[in-house]
Length: 178
Image (cartoon, rainbow, N blue to C red; front, side, top):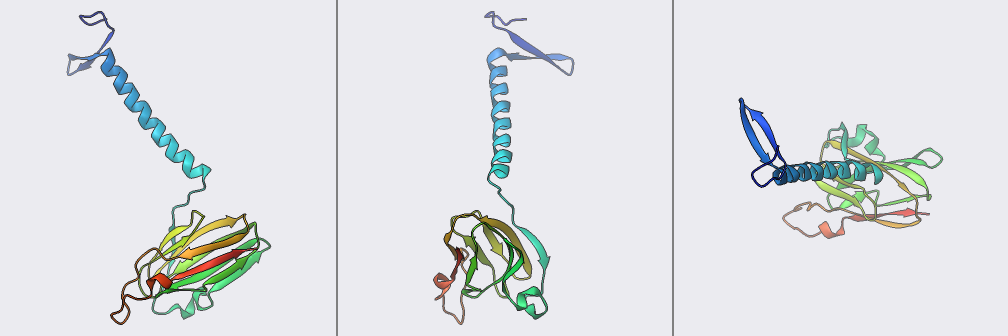
């Protein structure tokens, strides 16, 4: 079937009446669906190819009583050769601990919580970027393949202490990969 110009046309039946779609309208519909499929495929491919992880809540803790949890002794814990866990507190204007040393090639899983307010947890030059909320334990893991010093920063404004906004810029740490 073709339209009055001799171009191919498609007719669809809607409520027993034909719905006319010219060839160029059909072409644009196909192009639109194709672009949508390519976009969705690109999102799935990039998330798997670049090991993008969505931060999750590992567990909940009482932010006022962190003495009964693994956070009573924050720091680096070796599970096996090349495999570590880090329990870290993001408190008012400080990370505890604020320096961690691991061997190159190590896989490190971070468990981070806050006893006071919302904080950010960003390790520069990696894909680690989490929100740290009081009462929630946020987790992500990464493998440090390249030796060097990785800066750890809080990218969420932490608020006032005693009416003073001074100090947020001092909330940083470092991870030294040897």
